[in-house]
Image (cartoon, rainbow, N blue to C red):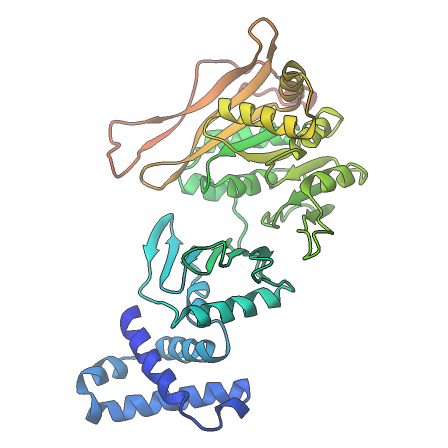
Length: 426
């Protein structure tokens, strides 16, 4: 049964159920039973009343019936059409632009759904339920709210009058199973050779920064990298919204930021958490993403005995992430000479991995570079490219085909590899 037909059946069924006089006194279980009974009646009587619809209804399997019953139940007592969307395990992103326009992302592609909320008021009621379950509130005085669902999904809500085309909801979902390097190889993001190089770099405690644009897979890649960390180390993860799924570490501490309350107080920032983490005797610190002044604290941690730290940041290239880091550090240390900032970056960050989302929506690792040092004469950080993504002749406008290729540049900073007893030539 198509989504459109299922929506039609669910809509008619809901109208019939809502006519029941005692509906408000029903328990959740009684309501479900009523919806299921009404569906069976509709299937039975459709042969006489609507032969064309009967053909559709008579072909319903157990899964279809369950979806329709739950959809009607949720539209009355729960999350309405939103339930059916977030129940789909293949959906990685949900974008609700007002009550009429709903988009989802599956396998990196956007789709506009036929489903819609009955009215703006229904969407507002559902948002209120959604937000209150997380112990938060959203209203005209506090129209923007971020929170996390029990399954780890990250939710952003923006309400009128800030949102001009009605309530906006964005839900970022994450796979139940942790992303592994084997998955990245299967998806064509990296090669087995590169995976082995990254494993050695992580074990040897190189400080690694993953850069890329929105949706390029930075957190996913960071999660895969973090699972190379030896099991016996003490790791502290710091995130805005907990997304990392590190499975092989026993001594693991997970920290998450907190937004300010309605009174503007009580906020806990990434910067606060990094400072606190340094007092917890970490061997490595993993920061989900640096966006501002916390970059200074992250760099200082990398420079003061916390080798092997990992983090991500928004950027369009490996050179661009360095400029962005300089800008972010200045937010936390205004007046600090740019030379001093650049030198600190060059001594803290060892490896930069740049990711990108290409024209065919595939996510690829575009470049892996090592940070060699700071050139005082040219006033710039020196980079040495180790791997570059190169397209093949088989690439087309709609399909990118290529792979990471080792450059001719030898790796120059081998001190940590040597200290770890790794003599493999990279």
